[in-house]
Amino acid sequence: MNINKKVLLLNNSYEPIQIIGGKKAIIMILLDKVDLIEKTNSFIRSEKLKLNFPSVIKLKTYVFIKIKSIPLTRSNIISRDNNMCQYCGKRSRSMTIDHIIPKDKSGKDTWTNLVSACENCNLKKGNSLLSQTNMTLLSKPKKPSHIYHMQKLVRNDNKSWKPYLFMNN
Image (tube, rainbow, N blue to C red; front, side, top):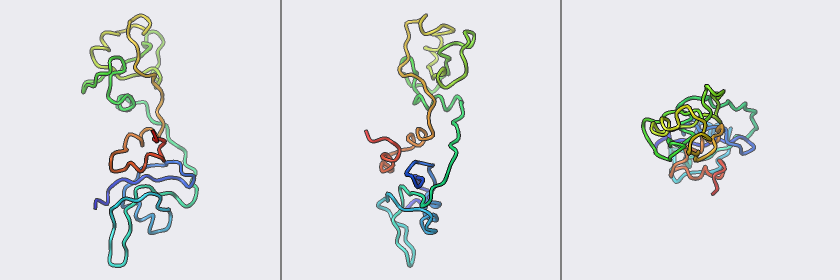
């Protein structure tokens, strides 16, 4: 059993707060600070205790948390766009960032104006507006939420997180 396995922490209102390590989750359960909502098939055992390893836990009392804004960085833009060129759909290790409205045409560095692009598409678009090319965006860029980053961490071993992260497709 890997005690460093990740656990989803929910507020008392069932809103996702963050993803924490398994060791911290076990301590919170033993201190009676959280309720065990979803568990795995693994166990933590000691001489006098047998405890299901948690997958999702919920705080017993509501905690007001000011959600931090996700910083506008190159890696966060590429992550938001799933490492895919937003013009042709190609995935590349040498992804670039493109201004939809170029800077010299009053384009700003914002979540809605920056997209990831492969080198070919970035060169092809150049310093032009989309209306001046025959290129289109695959999806409209927007600012990601903190829940979006947690959704990206959902793997096969933590599918039980999906209902709490609004992923019930």
